[in-house]
Amino acid sequence: MKRGILVLSLLFVTFVSVECFFRPKVRKFPIPEGDNPGKPLFLTPLIDAGKIKKAQHLSKVRPNIGNTTSYSGFLTTNKKCGNNLFFWYFPAQEDPDTAPLVLWLQGGPGASSLYGLFEENGPFNSFPDGLQTRNYSWNVKNNLLFIDQPVGTGFSFTKNGCYAKDQTDVGNDLYAALVQFMKLFPKLQKNNFFITGESFGGHYVPAIGYAIYKNNPKAKLKIKLAGMMIGDGWTDPREQIVYGDYLYQTGLIDYNELQDFYYYQEQFVQQVDHEDWSGAFDTWDTIITLYMTYAGTSVYNFLPQPADNSNWDQFVQDTSTRKAIHVGNLDFSEESDTVYQYLQNNIPQSVKPWVEELLENYPIVFYVGQV
Image (cartoon, rainbow, N blue to C red):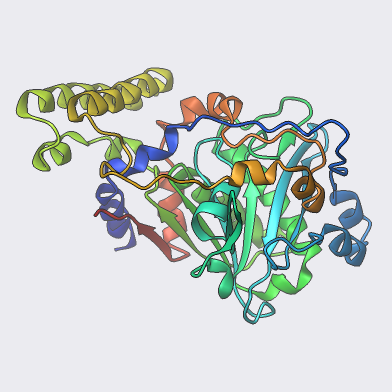
């Protein structure tokens, strides 16, 4: 029964699933000469040494940003590679001792989870005239954790070029970070833990969920995984590629254009079945181009939208913010082309087997909207 639910959910997720792959122009804001952004805070040595109180104290964001208590820093996930993941954690505004811990993962691949923090579900957003409190933040009733991942995304980095090449790499790095995070905030170990994400998070969420599921039985520190939630997730591309009929029935393409979709959809399926991942990626890209050419609209909301004047990307690169969240002068990548390129051939691949196994053990919500 659970597997039937999975298939229905994946088929229902239609064209909106791909929006994560179209990356906006990345803006860079250099540190002004003479400004002091502080130094990056690497917490793993303190955690390994059992100096938890000191690590907590140092990781606290000072001064509070948006009048909200939060903690941030870097967790080393692979010492040989020099892989370090940046996190920003917001204790729940209500009952943080018992509130669930919710991890948010942005898609991409290569998109910073700080986008979700500021633009979607965090406690505030940044605009030219200052920070604005979000009325319906997930942080009100949940301990909310954002992690820039894989390495190369956002403030996270690798010293020796050990970028993730598949979802096993993604899961391993995230799992290593989460174990350290639970040690850093031991009171959270008893709380329910939920993994959430969107778009290519449809790969990321099952990757870390599966890593926890496989490691928990033998792990000394067990993560209390209680469920997962995936929004417009790109999870099973072979099943999700069938855009043509949907676009035709909604009047976005005509009958002749539908035949082109049929041709490339079948080509994509054959390439996936033969594990021609590079070819499948190119075909998928062709299908998206066909849509934008034939329909004359964006893959995003085709209705006119008010201008988004959020300047969150500038805010996180500001010298004072850098110092407060302990990132120093490290480079920030809102959308990493390097991460994207390393995972490009992973985009047409499916994580359906992991999702099916996870569904036998945990509740998973797939959600998508259309207006």
